[in-house]
Amino acid sequence: MFELFSDFFACRDNILSRMDPRPKLVIAVTLILVVVRSSTVALPCTVLVCCTATMIALCIPLRVVALRMTAPLGIVVVLLVLQTFMTGTTRLFVLPVGSWTLVATEEGLMRGILMGLRVLGAVGVILLLSSVTPAYKIFHALRWFRVPEGWVEIALLVYRYAFALIDQASEVATAQRVRLGYVGLRRSLRSLGVLAGTVITRASDQAMRTYEAMMLRGYQGTIPFAPLSPMSTRERGIMCVVPILLAGAHFLIERLSG
Image 1 (cartoon, helix red, strand yellow):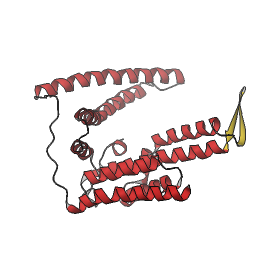
Image 2 (cartoon, helix red, strand yellow):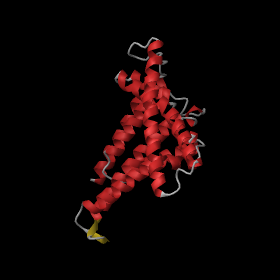
Image 3 (tube, helix red, strand yellow):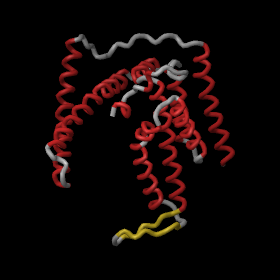
């Protein structure tokens, strides 16, 4: 659980973690936009493979990378199934489901694969960014880019207290498991309902305690951030040149494929 959700690996010393967070954030956003707007599978596949290879080269266990990809894989499967059976005209096969007959199409399958690879490519970029940049530096960079203060503060508090709620949910689930709360389908569903209600109640209590603690410490509507150190000439050049190269590569690939 700790390896899956924390930014433990981002605190390691390597060439990417030493870079200023602002160029990394600009490059990551550009890569995500390029991947999302791609009309072929070549660019998303390339981005996904490069991001995964970079994380492995930075000694991040493949097991952790695979676990972090689990949630988006579920979204990819849903997109693939919906597109395959709901769009297109060229029939691939027929799947009878009870009184229904589902028809898979070639166009839908290709569209589903493209959309799935877009999701995985964008997630790969986010995972790589979070693996080389601690969360507080990303929030700091967002403030420097004049992202609304309320958005940044909410994201900061959500990130801070998500781990506290995960710990509390884990404690409740462990107590339920010891008391055979997950033996049988009916008892498991009942235990899950109790767990969800407990987490919501504790989240509400934690929100009130956090607000009161912030007010006692002089909270005036904004959380102060220290100014970022100035970027070097090399980092400024990277922040300006690399997004232009990525956009140019995307335009060239789209022209050649079109």
